[in-house]
Length: 91
Image (cartoon, rainbow, N blue to C red; front, side, top):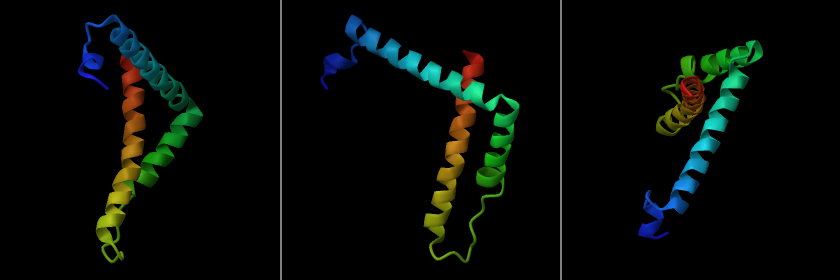
């Protein structure tokens, strides 16, 4: 990668950037379409309950730091899905 690859005035880079944005918009729309259906809402409710709300780390765990980090990662995936759904609503 060169500095010229970061030049947003370069038509080649503008096309690549717009293609990347369009791909991300489509992904967000797909998540929105999936999780706004009745079944998708039930799946999201399960994900929220399992990985966000009731996802605590036992203080007697062998490695509390690792386990809490692992749980945070699980919750992060659910939050990323929610973020994509919200972005699609704005598009």
